[in-house]
Every structure is written in structure tokens, then in C-alpha cells.
Image 1 (cartoon, helix red, strand yellow):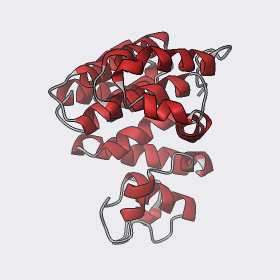
Image 2: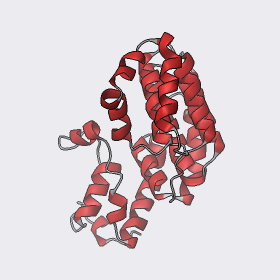
Image 3: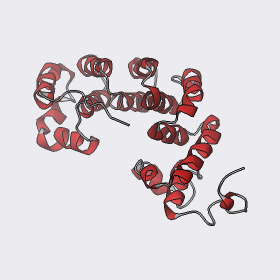
Length: 231
């Protein structure tokens, strides 16, 4: 039984704190209800877990573990963000089952990486990113996941994609991914492509400019080691 009395009634959030309600709407609640479209547009609130009390965090973990097998990527993302060791086995199983079959597959791999830094997670998303039979959106999700997996192997895979991939969107996100690996926050990485180095945005549209793009990337990452996130 839940430690929270408010899960006993018809309204599971009747007596919840405002912070817990934010968590619930982001990671558990219906994702396309009338008031949920903004979550789809702007993304999940990844900072909300730091605002929860220990009891709330434990309940959040329980709920996400419960929802994990339902095919919704949000609980997987949340479990990865809190480093839930209890989720490790399920995440690995779901990653293997869903590899390349659903948009959630990269989310499962990234969550597994965030929990235990499993090298197989890098291999899983790399396989999706490189698979030209997959649709571009699925491959782009995989490339973005690689940008969050702080390891030299991830960098090499992204550089390889940047050098040979004919699809502009994938080259663009590979460039951003390498920047994020080296510690640039995602919005700042985007500015480097679109504002600080506007010529790069145009060059990324031209596969033949790969070597010039690589040189600019070396310039932007010089002296910046791959930033390992500490939990």
C-alpha cells in the first residue's frame, strides 16, 4: 500500500504537494489530455525530482516502476534521472525488446546508461542511429541520446555519423551531440550552431563540407574534456 493517503481516493492527487503534482503530470498522467499538450511541446521537467521530499521521491519511483512496462517512455526517463537501481533489469529487458521498434527504445537505453553506464546501451542507440531503414525521427532520437551518454565511444560514433551521414538533420544533431558531450548545455550548443557559428549551420546542409565542420568542432571542444555527469 502506498505511503501516501491521497492515493486511496478517487483523485490520486487530492492532497499531494504542488511539486508532486508537477511530477505526476510530467511522468505518470495522461500525456495528451487538454492541459498536457504543453508537456509535449516543451519537454519534461527534469528538475522536479530535486524538489521532492524523500517520501515523495520513493513514491515517485514506485509509480514509475509500476508504469514502466506500459510502453510510455516518460517513466523510463524519470527512473534514469533519479538513478533507480530497481529499474535496471526492466530497462535492460525493454531496451532489448524494443530496439528500433518504437520511439521509446532510445529512452530505455539512455535511462539504463544513466543508472549503470551499461556499454550495451551505447551500442543499442548507435545501431538505431546508423540504421538507414529507420525513419529520421527515430534515428534523431538515438543521436540525441548519444549526446547524453558521456563516453569516448559515443563521441566516436557521433563523429562518424557527422562525417558520412547524408541526412542533414542527423548531421546537425551529431554536431550538437559532440558539443553536449564536452559540457555545452543543449541550448548553448544550439546557439553555437545557429548563432556563434552561423556558417556551420549552412555547412551542415552540405555533406561535402564535412572536413570543415570537423575542424570547427575541434576548435569548439579544444581543452574541454568529455563532461562526466556526477549523480
